[in-house]
Structure formats: C-alpha cells, structure tokens
Amino acid sequence: MSEGFKIEIVNPEKSFLVKEDVLEVVVPAFEGEMGILKDHISIISFLKPGIIKIFSKSGEESYYVEDGIVEFKDNNLSILTSIIFNVVDLDKSKLEDLLKKAEEEANQTEISDQFKYLADQKVQVLRSIN
Amino acid sequence: MASLDDLKKRIASVKSTQKITKAMKMVAAAKLRKAQENAENGRPYSEKMKNVILNLSNGVSDKENAPKLLSGTGNNKVHLCVVMTSDRGLCGGFNSNIIKKAKSFFSKILSEGKELKIITVGSKGNDQLKRMYGDKIIENISFKESKNANYFDAEKVSKIVIDKFEKSEFDICTIFYNQFKNVITQIPQAQQLVPLNNEVSEEKSSEESYEFEPDEDEILSNLLPKNISTQIFKAMLENSASEQGSRMSAMDNATRNAGEMVDKLTIQYNRSRQAAITKELIEIISGAESL
Image 1 (cartoon, chains in turn purple, yellow):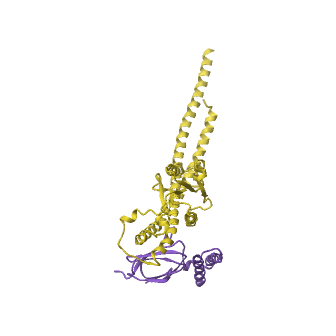
Image 2 (spheres, chains in turn brown, cyan):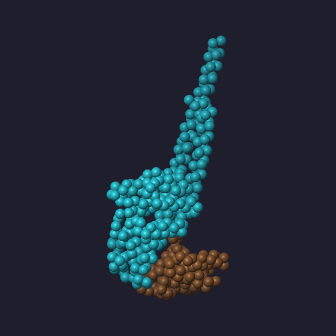
Image 3 (cartoon, chains in turn cyan, brown):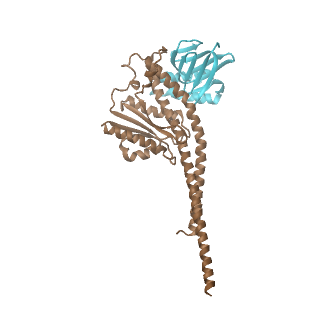
C-alpha cells in the first residue's frame, strides 16, 4: 500500500497535472482552506481564488487557481478548474497582468456581492504571491 | 468541338484548381491533428464534470426545490436552440448536416405549436437559417477572430444562455453540433442543455454518500452554469475537429476529381491533336494524288 493518494487536476483544454503518491493537499475551499490527507471522507466542494499546495515526498508545489471544483473519492482527488497557473511559472509581468485584471473586476460598481468578494480574494491572493 | 487552344486552357485551369484544393487539404490535415488533440484533451474535464453533477443530483433530496437549471421550469412552451456551425465554407456537408438536423427539429417544434428561438454560433449557420427562420433568430455569435476554440468563447455563449434562462425567456434549451467520430464520419447531434437530461443518473445511482461543503443546493447552483459552459465548450471542440475532418475529406475528393478531369481532358486534347494531324496528312496525300 502506498502512503499517499492520487491527485488529478484538469482544465477544459487538457489534463493539467496527474500525480501519484501525494501526502497532503491544501485547497482554498469556499468556506476556508481545507487540508486533504489520505482516506479523507468523500467530499465535493468548490474553490475560491487561492493557492493549491501539494505536498509529496519530492517536495512542495503551489498552484494559483481562480475557481474550480474538488471531488475526493476512493483516494482520488480531482480538481476541475478553468484558470490555473504554477506559481513557479508566474513571473512578474504575468502576475501584474492578472493583478490588473482582478483589480479591474473588483472595482466594477455594478456587480453582486459574491462576485465582488471573489474579485477581492483574487487581488489579495495575487498580492500575497508578489 | 472545342479547339486545341481551348482544351489547353481548360487543362491548365483545372490543374491550378487542383493545386488549391491540395493545399487546402494539407492545411486541413494539419489543423485536424491539432483540433483532434484538443478535443481529446478536453474530454476528461467534461467527463469529470458530468460525474460530479451526477453524484450531486443523486444527492439532492428535495427534488422540488432543486435549481431550475437542473429540473426545468416545468413548462415546455418555449424552445431555445443553439446551432453551432463553422465560420468558413468549403467543408463538404459539415454545415448542411447540422442545419438539416436543426431544421427537422424546428419544424417538429413549430408543428406542435410551441415557440422557437434560435441562437446561431458561426456565420455559416446564420446564412443558411436566416432565409427560412430569419424572424426566429434572436442572436448571432461568431468567433472569427479566435483561431482555436477556447474556453472563454464558450463562456460567452453560456452566459447569454443563462441570462436568457434567468429572465425566463425559454424553457428548454437544445444545442446542435457535429460530433467527431473519424475523418469521414461526423454525426450531427442534438443535445439538451436545460433542463439537464438525467437519464443516465438512474442507472448509476451509487450509494456512495458524499460530504458537501457548502450544501448540495449551493454547490449545484454554482456548478450547473459551469456545466453549461463545459458542454458548450465540448461542442465547440468537437465541432472544430469535425470541421477540419470534413474539409479534409471534401478537399481530398475535390483533388481526386480534378485529377480525373485532367486525365480526361488530356486524352481529349491528344485525340483532337491527332485528328488534326491525320486530317492534314489526308489533305496532302489526296492533293498529291490528284496531280
């Protein structure tokens, strides 16, 4: 028996990441950060903008996501998301682009509270990476 | 009979047409590989999405209060049809097949006395439909600028659909596209988007209980619009693969036909050249004989 579980991240264009033997994954679930370990109960939840952290024996990886759904079942974690970036790949200019876009969204006046909250989250997270 | 010169010109023109169709075939083949790859890469996402929705809709205990996008408005008076076609022609029966399928569906709906609204995606579909159903088309979307099918375009379409649903402008939404089977076969599909068709959910009702965070209803109401985008995106991917496949085989046929035509014309050209020579010879010989 392996000690870890399997994680699969897919976006609409392709399967973004498949990784076996992951020890722990921290996802920015809608109601707060959620750590998932092996043999977690089956769960479905969705994500708010934030950082997914994947801990495995080979080290730690971080990904920035803007939205998504997580499903955990039988030690398989699937994350469906439309916008995802590896934090390592995010250089200054890209980060600034994203931040600018998020700030524009947050500064719109005619948006619902929920949308505003999500946009603010985006700005906050992006700033923290900076 | 055409003169030698005319024949020569025709052969040259058919040959240059053949060159064009051959080049188009090559381009389509290259694009097809990419489009097919994209379509295959996109499948896991829509499959996963479908599974999650299935599991969720099984978990919804209170069917009465389920989100409207799942259960429908309870009416079936107004139909919205999203017809997805390409922006470019010269791709065989690709567009006509979708339109044919859509038209038969339209006439069925209209004969039942229901109201029909059409959204066309892609300019070719709009061109073909506006003659017969011009007054029914409420929106025409075209993504001429974007090279490949991308998710943001799909989201734009789904936003329009969802907006219209929230304003209760329609009860049932069906989407028309070509499913890519292989290069020669593309199957026109009619898929119901709203309310969600959950025939499958009954056979696969797993007893697995999930923990939901937040509760089912909230997740569902967030997930269903996403599912619509995903389905539309899937249709776009399938469509672009089908378009290239269809264009490739159409251009392949055209190239072959042009080849046959060149052969035929060449034979005709040679024969008439020979006939002219023979005629001249006879004239010379009979001229000599009469002396």
